[in-house]
Amino acid sequence: MTQQPFGTQQPFHPGAITEQQRERAISHLQSLYANGTLGEAQFNQRLDLAFAARDRAELSRALQGLARIAPVALTRPAPGQPTPAENVAGGLTHLSGFVTSFIGPAIVRAVATPGSKLWWEASRAFSLQLTAFALGAAALVLTTILGFGGGIMTLGWLVWVGATVFAAVRAFNGRPGTDGFGHLLLARPKAPQASLGYTR
Image 1 (cartoon, rainbow, N blue to C red):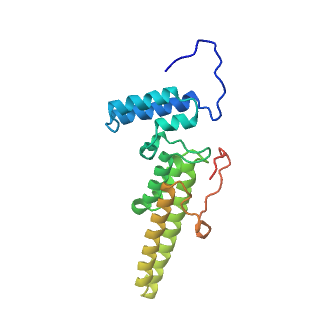
Image 2 (cartoon, helix red, strand yellow):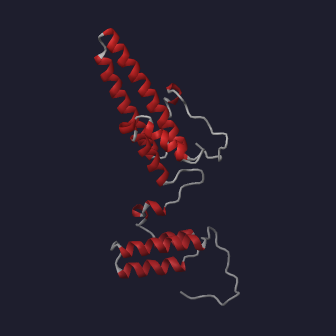
Image 3 (tube, rainbow, N blue to C red):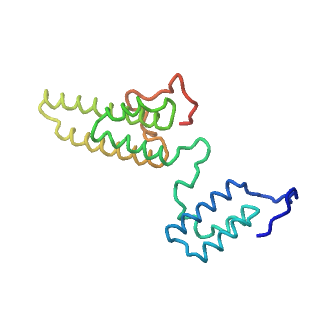
């Protein structure tokens, strides 16, 4: 690659890339070479293309055929969108309801930053598990007093399991876990007074 003399202004190219974008592409190529995905010859060829790239089209040629195997950590979420780590934490918070009922989500909500993605998802999980706990307790009381309702308990258990899994899967994918039935739940989450302005 030939370098221009110092102080020489480079011509403008539509879709010009930033040095940060170039560095991310080079870092990705280096990681693929390190784990054996790329051979030395292909690595050197693609590295030359990345260093010489002046616009997005040229940089894309250096990564052609590799985009689908790029690690998630290198994929930056759009502004206002949750990160992969936040998605995982939100999904796990919902799944904690299987073991702790509403206690696990309540703890996560208490330690999370108010208004953050995790805070909102923990609030949804808390609302879901608290509602399930209240309905389960009511069904148990009715079953004990009236002497029937075993079928209702089984149905309720299945609905609880299904709703928890459904909410966890949505959270893992970066979507609000209880959207669609959140209005039916107790203790629905509300924006904290000291909200950080996070988009739900």
